[in-house]
Image (cartoon, rainbow, N blue to C red):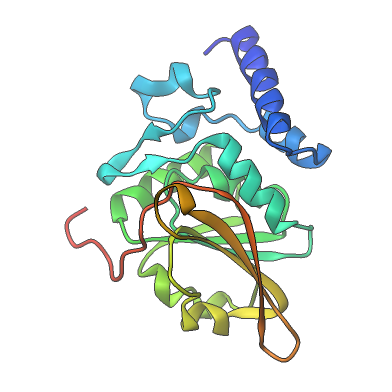
Length: 216
C-alpha cells in the first residue's frame, strides 16, 4: 500500500476508534503509527487499514481494529506494566500493547500462528513482545506475575491458573456469554484476592479451547 493510501487509511481508522469512544490520545497515535500490513495475509493487505475482521491461518480470524482498541483502552496500560495475552492470533493486539506497556507475553495453541505472528512482530522491531506455542489456559508461569491478562476468547469464569499469575490490583479481561449477549468483562483482583467484575462492550469471540493443536 502506498504512503498516501496508508495516511488516509490511518486517519479513517482513528475516526472509527473515536466513534466507539476510544478517545485516549496515546492509544489513537499508537494505532495510527502501527502498520497492520505485516499482520495481514498478502492477498488481504488492501484492506489492512479497514475496520473489518480478516482471515488468518488455522481457520482463525483477525479481530477488528476497533475491538482491539476497546480492549487495550480497557486494560489502561502504563509503561511499567507486564501483560499476558492468551490467544496471539495475528499478533496485532500484542503489537499495540507492546508499544504501551513494558513487556507483553503472548501464547497461542497453534504453532503456525505463533510463527507467523513472530515474523510480523520482528518486522516492526518489537523486541519487548515474546510469543510462544502452548496451552493458554496454563498461562506463562516463568514470566509471571502479570499486571494485565487478556483472553481473546469466551470463558465461563477466569481460569484459576491465570488468576494465580495476576498481581494484586491487576486486571483480567475476557469475553463471556453467547450471541448478542456476549460482552467483554473486566475482572479486577483485590488485595485480598477477591474479584470485582465489570461488563464492558459487546464482542464476538469464540469459546476458548484447551490444550494445543497437534497438526497446525
